[in-house]
Image 1 (cartoon, rainbow, N blue to C red):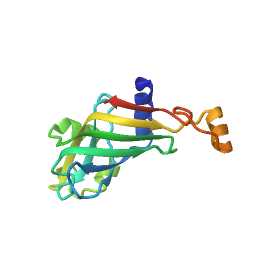
Image 2: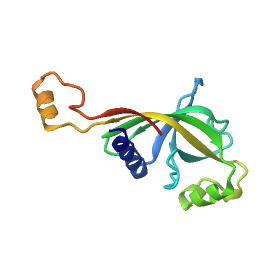
Image 3: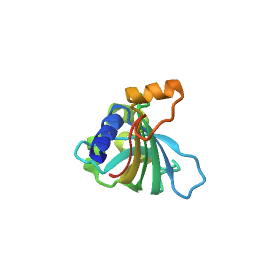
Image 4: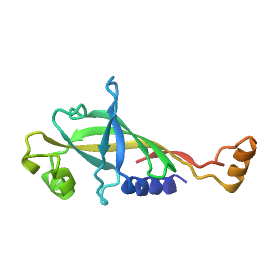
Length: 154
């Protein structure tokens, strides 16, 4: 099951790449970020941000994700690091990112962060017909009747 749920996660994240990210052990709230995905990298994604963003320092972090249709949820653990590979920056750069940085790719405030993924808990909300009937009639639900849950290594 974990391979199927991982595939579902990557598909959902690709369709709506918005996550809430916060540094571990930090009292600051998480911030919304737009994950930049690379189809050749399945254990990382990236964020363009500014040097004054609370995430810019990097470190152990958590990201929370809810799919566009609210049928998949994930809590992702990993580590934020400054990405220094210019080829990655060039590959991920696009017009919607450029709109945020007056100096373009050379903007002195621009930082590209790589989120190296460790593991995640993923939940799907895909009720079975039996599960929907039980919920509608107030019957006791059993695990798996409203979706799946897995702890996976990413």
